Length: 344
Image 1 (cartoon, rainbow, N blue to C red):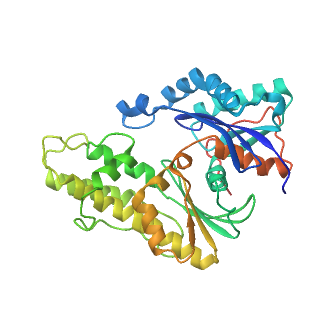
Image 2 (image 1 turned 90 degrees about the vertical axis):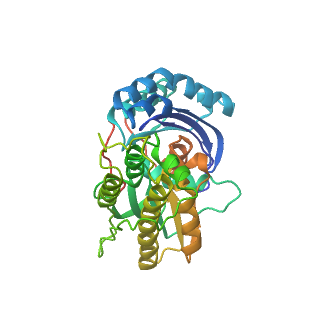
């Protein structure tokens, strides 16, 4: 499977409008991302209607910039890959309609891509590193997803488990809101945790023995209870800036609990299924504590993408599109988005 390809990827599953051109599933010719973080900060989370409107306003320019930066025209492409799901329905539709229009106009194949699969393929885009080796275990950890996936070969997956409630990134967002640290929660908690004592508070770990699933709702509740004890007059679930809470210790202890479970269960699964490598991908994989803990505790190689490939981007969509294209996938122009599309 060493056929040369040039794939245009389009991503609009949540709050980033992105387009990229990737060659041979490995080399990024361009990667353009228009973030909406500032638009959603006032809401403390993603506001779906605002997100879809923002995608509409900038997707044409983002795609044009990706093609221009890569110095290619539509006639030089082999296919257009676009996120089909999972994600916000309104946001997904914007990217899908853009891809359909371009594919129809240029007579190019259209390939719908699973966003979770694409996060795994972000590891194929790391320059100067060999391709990951099978079988491998993938931890996809982001604002909307926490999934453990055994990848036996290209495009062949076994979902081992996932979150039963809040995704890890969602838990970060909610605790950041509780502590009045702002949005997005992951970077805010990480920054606040610097200098904090991760053992200051003995927050619970939900190990869910006998499964490969995760749960962070109990941890979230435990942090809320602790804050309420420290600040009895807590209102609307948000701490007051006027109260001298031990923010660094709370953030560090919460982060340590999340990291402990993510790393512990992933390493146990890797051992159970004989994975030779670990792939950790998704927005939360940018967390330094998570990265360093994996590297310190894992007996097998741990591969984490560079920061710019952790968060949502279109290069990973195009990379997955390369393998789908080689496998013969061609989707009709009437395909619809799948907001709840599982990886396996």
